[in-house]
Image (tube, rainbow, N blue to C red):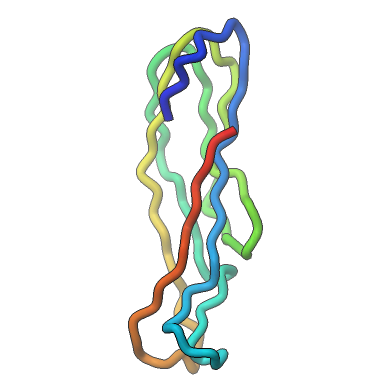
Length: 107
Protein backbone atom coordinates (compact mmCIF):
# COMPACT_ATOMS: atom_id res chain seq x y z
CA UNK A 1 0.00 0.00 0.00
CA UNK A 2 1.46 3.37 -1.01
CA UNK A 3 -0.23 6.43 0.45
CA UNK A 4 1.01 9.53 -1.39
CA UNK A 5 -1.68 11.92 -0.11
CA UNK A 6 0.84 13.73 2.13
CA UNK A 7 -1.88 14.11 4.76
CA UNK A 8 -1.29 15.89 8.05
CA UNK A 9 -3.32 13.26 9.87
CA UNK A 10 -5.21 10.38 8.31
CA UNK A 11 -6.16 6.70 8.47
CA UNK A 12 -6.85 3.87 6.07
CA UNK A 13 -8.16 0.33 6.34
CA UNK A 14 -7.27 -2.65 4.16
CA UNK A 15 -10.05 -5.21 3.94
CA UNK A 16 -10.25 -8.73 2.58
CA UNK A 17 -13.05 -11.08 1.58
CA UNK A 18 -13.38 -14.43 -0.15
CA UNK A 19 -15.88 -16.26 -2.28
CA UNK A 20 -16.55 -19.94 -1.82
CA UNK A 21 -14.06 -22.22 -3.59
CA UNK A 22 -15.67 -24.62 -6.05
CA UNK A 23 -14.79 -27.20 -8.69
CA UNK A 24 -17.48 -25.79 -10.94
CA UNK A 25 -19.93 -28.47 -9.90
CA UNK A 26 -23.18 -27.77 -8.10
CA UNK A 27 -23.05 -30.26 -5.24
CA UNK A 28 -22.05 -29.29 -1.71
CA UNK A 29 -19.22 -31.85 -1.93
CA UNK A 30 -17.73 -29.66 -4.68
CA UNK A 31 -17.73 -26.46 -2.58
CA UNK A 32 -15.35 -25.24 0.11
CA UNK A 33 -17.19 -22.44 1.96
CA UNK A 34 -15.46 -19.07 2.33
CA UNK A 35 -15.72 -19.62 6.10
CA UNK A 36 -13.12 -22.38 5.73
CA UNK A 37 -10.55 -19.88 4.42
CA UNK A 38 -8.21 -18.17 6.91
CA UNK A 39 -6.26 -15.00 6.03
CA UNK A 40 -3.19 -14.09 8.07
CA UNK A 41 -1.62 -10.73 7.11
CA UNK A 42 1.56 -11.57 9.02
CA UNK A 43 4.06 -8.82 9.73
CA UNK A 44 3.47 -5.35 8.30
CA UNK A 45 6.52 -3.37 7.16
CA UNK A 46 6.14 0.40 6.96
CA UNK A 47 7.98 3.54 5.88
CA UNK A 48 7.13 7.08 6.92
CA UNK A 49 5.04 8.11 9.90
CA UNK A 50 2.37 5.44 10.21
CA UNK A 51 1.13 2.80 12.64
CA UNK A 52 -0.17 -0.21 10.70
CA UNK A 53 -1.82 -2.90 12.79
CA UNK A 54 -2.51 -6.33 11.29
CA UNK A 55 -5.42 -8.39 12.52
CA UNK A 56 -4.94 -11.83 13.95
CA UNK A 57 -5.64 -14.59 11.46
CA UNK A 58 -9.27 -14.19 10.40
CA UNK A 59 -11.87 -16.49 8.89
CA UNK A 60 -13.20 -15.05 5.65
CA UNK A 61 -16.75 -16.16 6.29
CA UNK A 62 -18.06 -14.55 3.10
CA UNK A 63 -18.02 -11.05 4.60
CA UNK A 64 -15.55 -8.19 4.36
CA UNK A 65 -13.02 -8.31 7.20
CA UNK A 66 -10.35 -5.81 8.30
CA UNK A 67 -6.88 -7.12 7.42
CA UNK A 68 -4.71 -4.10 8.34
CA UNK A 69 -5.68 -0.78 9.92
CA UNK A 70 -3.40 2.26 9.66
CA UNK A 71 -3.48 5.22 12.02
CA UNK A 72 -1.22 8.10 12.97
CA UNK A 73 -0.45 8.79 9.32
CA UNK A 74 1.55 11.95 8.61
CA UNK A 75 2.83 12.64 5.09
CA UNK A 76 3.58 10.03 2.48
CA UNK A 77 4.03 6.45 3.67
CA UNK A 78 3.96 2.81 2.64
CA UNK A 79 2.87 -0.43 4.22
CA UNK A 80 3.42 -3.93 2.88
CA UNK A 81 2.58 -7.41 4.04
CA UNK A 82 2.71 -10.92 2.62
CA UNK A 83 -0.52 -12.65 3.65
CA UNK A 84 -0.89 -16.39 4.04
CA UNK A 85 -4.11 -18.15 3.11
CA UNK A 86 -5.10 -21.45 4.66
CA UNK A 87 -7.99 -23.50 3.35
CA UNK A 88 -9.55 -26.21 5.50
CA UNK A 89 -10.79 -29.02 3.28
CA UNK A 90 -14.17 -30.24 4.57
CA UNK A 91 -14.72 -33.94 5.15
CA UNK A 92 -16.50 -35.35 2.13
CA UNK A 93 -15.04 -32.85 -0.34
CA UNK A 94 -14.44 -34.44 -3.72
CA UNK A 95 -11.00 -34.42 -5.29
CA UNK A 96 -10.51 -31.80 -7.95
CA UNK A 97 -9.24 -28.38 -8.83
CA UNK A 98 -10.98 -25.69 -6.79
CA UNK A 99 -11.00 -21.99 -7.51
CA UNK A 100 -12.30 -18.96 -5.69
CA UNK A 101 -11.70 -15.22 -5.44
CA UNK A 102 -9.95 -13.44 -2.57
CA UNK A 103 -10.36 -9.67 -2.77
CA UNK A 104 -8.25 -7.06 -0.94
CA UNK A 105 -9.07 -3.36 -1.03
CA UNK A 106 -8.07 -0.19 0.80
CA UNK A 107 -10.21 2.75 1.84
